[in-house]
Amino acid sequence: MPEKEKNRFSQILEQLMNLAEIKNAALAKALQYDVSYISKWISGRMLPAEKTKRNVLQRISSEIVRLSSAVGIETLYETYQVANKRDLEQVIFDNLEAEYDYVQDMQRLYGSSVAPKTIFFVDLNPAQYISKMHHPVLRRVSRLYIMAQMDLLALAHEYRIQIIQGNIPRGPYHSYPDVHFSLMIDLSPDKIDPIYDPIFLINMMKEEAGLDFHLYKGKQAAGRMLFTVKDDFMISGILTAPNRCMSVTVSSEADNCNPLYDSIRNLCTREMLLYRDTTMADMVNGNGYIRSILALHQRWMIGQMTEHFLPDDLFEELLEQTEIEAEEGLDKEMLRNLHRLTKKAMEETRIKVIFHRIAFSNLAVESEIDFFDHKISLTLQQRIRYLKYLLELCTEQDTMHFRLIHESPVPDFQYAVTQSIFLSDTFCYMRLNTENGKNNLAVLNHPEMKMIFERFFEIIWSDQDDMSLSDHEEIASFIRQMIHRTEIIASINTENTPDLLEYC
Image (cartoon, rainbow, N blue to C red):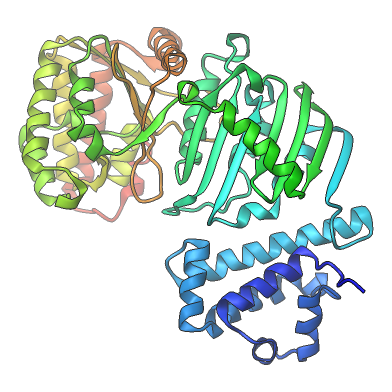
């Protein structure tokens, strides 16, 4: 008689115990359960009781980490790509909970703890589609290969956000280079909102920066909702309206997943790639930074203050205090040359600069600037000197033209625009200001991507309503207020009271 197929919860629990090299009896003793319970959980004959689920899963996660062998704990760290026991306990718990909830849903929907290999739905709304798309397999953050072809810009805003956030664990400083995700979207002009969609694209790029993520354009994505994980899972449907998916197929059969994976992969060609990741070392050594500074028609949007606006003495201080290691490929003398070049370009080249108010807030409250892709905290006195130099540029530099955005261009958008965008005729790139250790740089290498952000910039630049300031004297007055309030804090020497600057 063939062995009964196990449910996903029993599979992941057995896998975790095997990786950690833990016997059933050892886990049972640690949990103070009879060993028969552990055997039934692993065999799939029983689940932990739903009313005590959270407590039991947390205890299992903790004991798996505590009881793991030396080899086992290293294997778990590699599998989940975390660096300490606290994070490891949390991601194991999240994985167990996701699989437990998946099995419970199968029991409620189909009367079985094991999902059918292939399921068909005539009609789903986007929320239902997304709930099925967020399969527990996405918790596997090593050796995960994903291809998708989705008409994202045809969806309502809240559904887009749910899709890009996905079911892959995220958190500060987490990076998952073994999660390979390629996504094709349709960029037809009639679908693009010139204000909202550039902000959405930026935040999608930021959200996925911790993955090996590639974004492509293609009309083939129009009306499509295709998502597949190689060897493991697929969901496909036709988007007939912003709130309706038709002919949806969900399958965990490799024979269904892999042909879809291969067909999307073949469409994602280099010519369709919208941007490419890079590093500051590559930007500097490959002359991308110089090309950006010397290019014609310069337009900058600043979401976090950068090294571009540093006076000479403060630049030298920060350069010496920054932990720029030789292996990063950033030579300090080269950075000094780039600083001198930038200063000269700002004196002699017409540059349009839009500052987000949040860039000033971050400088005041969090004291951070982006210094060649390194986040550096400035002292109060250094912040004052930075702001005074900005004031000098605003009032004395005829080639620099400024705007200041008071409010978010999209008030209902859940993300703050803390990214910086550098546009020109020949070289365009972004600093995404991610939280996974370092900023992520993205070069806009596709003409359509450049056009979207150039149009976005010009709309914001030309705005004449209450969202922005365009008069240089008004902007200078705002900077003077920032300087004055920072000086007040500095005068009472309370470096530990940043909240006082929140409303500057």
